[in-house]
Length: 182
Image (tube, rainbow, N blue to C red):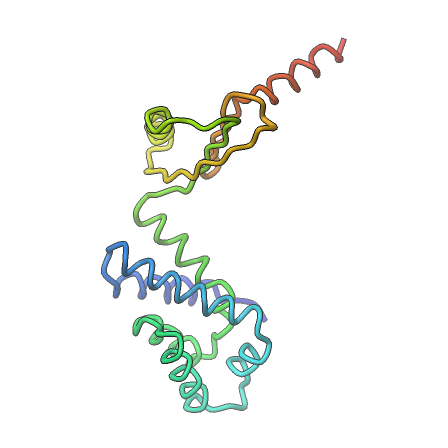
């Protein structure tokens, strides 16, 4: 069954408008949506129950209430879940967490990024890299730093679709290609 992207986006936008724009509230809602999405994707019995057209909304609502109590779901997440089930668009649960995170990042103009180095780098250098990339992209970037000794030296920076690979490994590979192309 195809996901109705308009409904998915509308549900996520309503959720974003209802919850406070503070980190703890966003993390709670994000975690709750991730739990529901994971449950929908991995538990066939849950998915079949939600999608079963022969069951009444009241029966499905009882399950949602039990689920929300056991998992301690945010009331706004429960409302969104009930709405999706009531209008027979329960299949949006397959992508609801991903869409929510996308919209949060877009709202805050934040991009997740990654800095890969061969050796540990200090905070000062990381801050310089962050400022340079944020200036290039025009968005706030949150970096995860990872070490990969296979790059030998230098740095690889990834943020959204932006990639800067100034690693020794890449330089040597390009040099090899140039030397062997003659």
